[in-house]
Every structure is written in C-alpha cells, then in structure tokens.
Length: 110
Image (cartoon, one colour):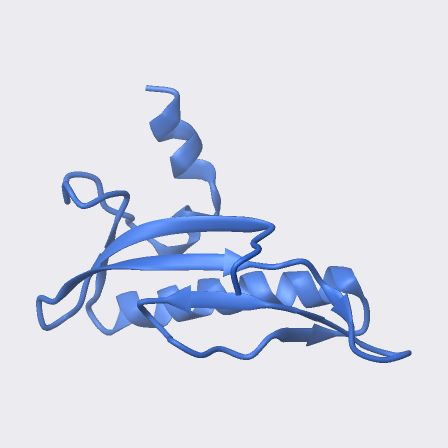
C-alpha cells in the first residue's frame, strides 16, 4: 500500500536487541460488497503482510485496522520489545496506547 490516509514511524528494539523502524499505515476504507467494507493496513518492519480490516461499514473497518496496529504493538511490547519516538532512543513509549496520540501531542508541545 502506498497511499495512506494516516501513517506513523516508530523506532523499535526487539527483545533480542535488533534495532529497526516500524512504519504503520492505514489506507482509505473501500467497499467489498453490499454488506461489508475493508480498510488497508500495513505494519512494515513488524509484519510484512497483514490483512485488511473488514467490517460492516467504513467506520468499523477503519477502527479494526487501527486496532490491529495497537494489538500488534501491544504484543511486541509484551514479549519485551521496546518502542521509541525516534532512533535517538531517548524517549520511549511506556505503553502501546501512547502511539495513538497523547504523548506525541505532549512531545510536540515541549
């Protein structure tokens, strides 16, 4: 997917010490058929191939795609992975919920 509606890059360190970037991206929801919608999602660096979020309408499909990103980051951190705002490794996420915006807002207002 190359056309994102929203995107974020997060620097990560695996439990084994490997350092890499994670690129989260969510695309525009699209209609699958008369009863369902899908929303593209990517988590480059963490999962190279990920299924689109599918829901009963565009709102639900978008929500499920964002929730997939949150769940994947939560799982990564639960296994001992560390997430940082950037590759300086000075400011890290204390919980996977922070990538949703609150701490980025705080950080940008310093």
